[in-house]
Length: 315
Image 1: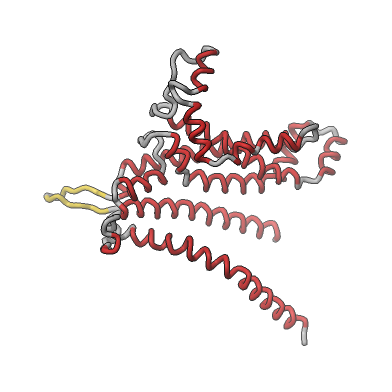
Image 2 (image 1 turned 180 degrees about the vertical axis):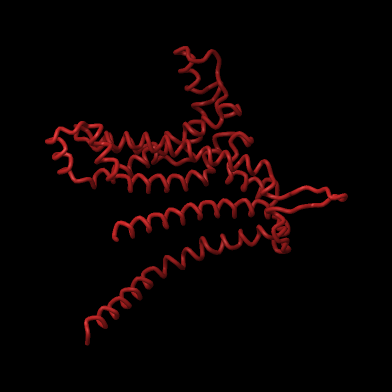
């Protein structure tokens, strides 16, 4: 028997074993993810409501976009894509994702560089840094809601004591400061996650490179720019993508920390409102479907870009 045939059989055997091990996970995902997702997409093309879920009728793309003519050549567009509140939610979500991920990446990189150094008590500091990330988001949001309270909050008291503000600020209730408050809490909570992923990338950088750079007299800033940053860039990109996907579907921290206003409403909050509060189940399903498509598009783009980069390096 030739070696080629043996390799072919071995490859097929490994493929069958891989599918066998993956089967329970794929079945679980089909039950808990694929079926609800498929139902949500289906409901977005119907007139479903909470009361008439079983009697939903197919209405096509009416929930997404529909032109209604009034006569004399005049009319108006209706649907999700013509809803100003939806597009404000999209803007809020993008703003939240861009600002939070940017600050978390910078702060996470700084913290990771510090934690990567040798100093006494480094293990204790690493554990302490992870505490904000370990606290459940609901608990963090309620805790910060009290701290940012305009009458009883410690934040206003501290700022007034040092003279930065003259009177208490309703951080989470005012449209001017609500998004700032949400960003501040999210950056505080999620920066340790970014630091942890970037620190893992720093741990993979060989120490010999730094020793050689030190012998050559390379300045620290140039070592970081020419050696450290390029070598940890794959870890940074993975951390940014994972955090961006999480930020785009943000719900809990906004829902708990702020009132339901246009200033902080995100796509997830918009979908939840229409699904349950307004009993527009089909409309909320359409919003959920568009949110899923945005996240899926970003994920697929990242996977394809990573694959092309790996194939380019191999060639």
